[in-house]
Image (cartoon, rainbow over all chains, first blue to last red; front, side, top):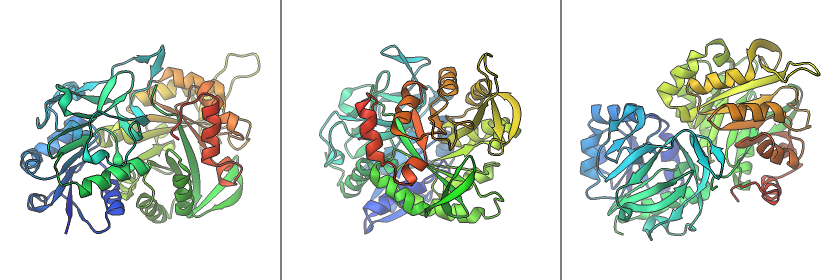
Length: 213
Length: 257
């Protein structure tokens, strides 16, 4: 049985993530849980997240999810989504500065206000369907066109320290690291569970991924 | 640019059925909400907005079940509005699978509710719906006021100031409906759309009055809207979402194809 644990730390709508995974992998056993033993036993783990990073990190730390994430991300396919991606970085500028889990060497930065591109002011949050250029070949991009659109909604973006961690990039007033990865870890700023065909394809790839690149 | 302008079909739902009225009367039945949502998803809609217009709000559970069913079959963003008054109402809808909730009247009666909601759930899921009506006379400087109760009750609040206040309180997006235009098929009120879009840094969805595809383009180009919402042109087969997108692309508007 292919078990996928979606880590529940009380932030946001986790059901859309689990429903989307169930939709692409009806045979998988998808758990939305905060139970550390169930998460440790799972074949693959998803860290979702929406909302403000301060509240997310507070819950992550209160529930010991940070240590658990460090542990389970060692040896099995691991997917971070949106704030769940940002939480993997070292530090976020949001809420006057918040230290994150520090699994990957990157910073979470504010888009800036005003955000200008070609003389036009861009709205923040970055909300809607934007193109993602695939920076590297990766099993999670399989069957997905380079430049395909995904659904984003965020006001802070990830900037990795080294390009070797960048798996996909997007552009909104400035370049943003839309997908990052390292070994068995993959994380995306956009919401695959809300990105229709392209997002469902990515989730399907994740459920079939052996964690090798 | 890379970000696509969004096309959002809107489902007004009364007692579990999609309806569409002309200025809130003369209601025509347009089908089962889950089926309608699935059809729009297949056509490539960028989001779906689902407004519960059941007058009594006695039957909230029907709504929750409909949202649950829709969210397990349709994998694009789903906004739910109508009768959202408490943090508990929001939690219920998000847990059922909504990605965003739209707050209207409750924000007018208690602007701090928007702050409380955005702090609790994040700005990204809090849409503030503004029903605006032009109150300036001919020859006067344009002025719009916000109305509640389907455009029947004036509030005395200036629409532009209100939009700024809602953005300051943590709204992630504004859903702007022109009550003069709603159901009239004459196009959006571009004046108020442009004024609010320029006044706030958050995305604005234009709503109310779409009668043809040019109106969608006008909302983006003339009104500065980040997304355009329409109901009847899609519900009754006048146009499909792909037709709308083709038309917009031909007019130089970037959309998701």
